Length: 342
Length: 264
Image (cartoon, rainbow over all chains, first blue to last red; front, side):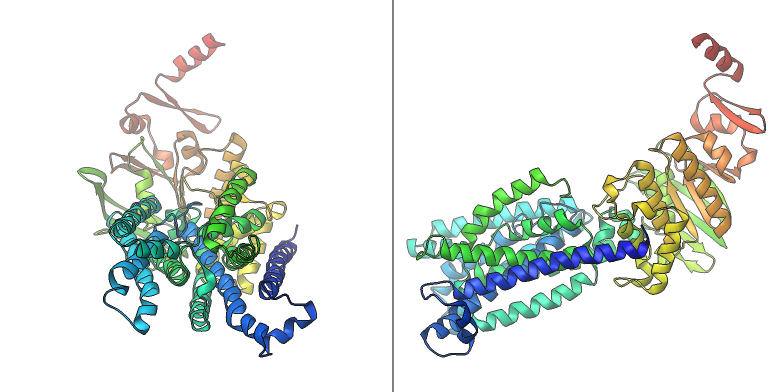
């Protein structure tokens, strides 16, 4: 096969997957917008975004931001999953296994139990939970990196540090829950479920900005992730400043996760499963894996959120419960069926 | 082109892995590094590639000081093939592209693609381009790694036991390619070999390392059995037959011959 033909075939394969994911996103967005207590006919769909009647208001103020939040959070989690798995050379690396989600849970619990009810009120009270969750997640990431730097930034050390810190933050959360009122304990528990109904347009703007900046930064380094697949020494010889790259990429992926989790709670398995789905079809070349893992994360969370709203209708399940419920068997299926997960 | 290494020391705890290493190497040299296990052969290569910290050591390739170069600049001067590297799930084409990333980063230029096409022709890789590295045989994989390393257009090529997992046919192919490429491109090639027979046939110079020190640094043809005995602490003998030198360990050639006859 000539080189030109190989380039063309690769391009077609990647575009086909991108097209499939893109079409899935459009269909799922449409389903998310029209599904609910007030049914919509297909031909009425476009009017929903302009008209001011009750249904139009519901779509514009509730369903659309919720669907866009699912898409953006899914994409952010997919992106951070692929980065963590890439820089740590471990297929099990994800925001959850690195303890970043547990740290967010601790931050939110701290805000709910210690600060929000006693010290703060007004607009800051509304922001305090995501702010504390975000700061706590970033603190966890910085601690992982600091511990890693002490012993040479090896992937194994970073993962073990993440597992240890995750456990520490989780025990901190349980400690707080044990000594607080039942109402506050319930509030912290509900926060950890992962719920997209809190979406508002200002939050979506923040998430979009961080997503697009991260995508550009991460994609521009796609070849460095491929080089790391051969090991640190080989990657250095291909031109990668391994330690700096690992730290900066971990910080970026932590930022993506921390932001998503801070606003919407813990949503498990998307960051873990989305990259593996793409790997099974296209392999581990990060020029395709980075953007397409983001898209597949978006598809997974949009699909999960739509299912969470519809499967026990009129009861709406928090999406975090569903992603963990379907994510675990999905991962097991990928492990059994796919030899390419590496 | 001259590579100058001076003042190279390396220790882990109290154990000295490299001790007062210094040498000069020139374009066209194929330098075999031989020595017992733990002599510091791989450690020496990792220092030349600046993978391990150089500290007080200086390594100059003509006027370029390796200690002050960024990884991307270094990658254009030195290509290193590790003894143990993991295999990612990427295609042969993507592995070859990695060899040009130090030049162009995320977007390969027209010139890069031209060079990759030339390399594909030279190494007869057309049929493998779409295959995953994991699906290749050991010989094919090693060939791809060498091709990717040469796409870096290095002046110095470092090969750490490149033939240890290959069958005899692939071993010969690899060693011949190493020798001819070094001559044609005027490279300085360092190769760690365990098989002295191969070292005798395919290198121009030998560095004998023992306990982190250079025991001998000689043109290959000047090797004697005394040097080998001092290096490996084992009885050794050299015999010339039909213009080729053969090495025997443990007992003399005659004993070896007799032993061979008895076993037959």
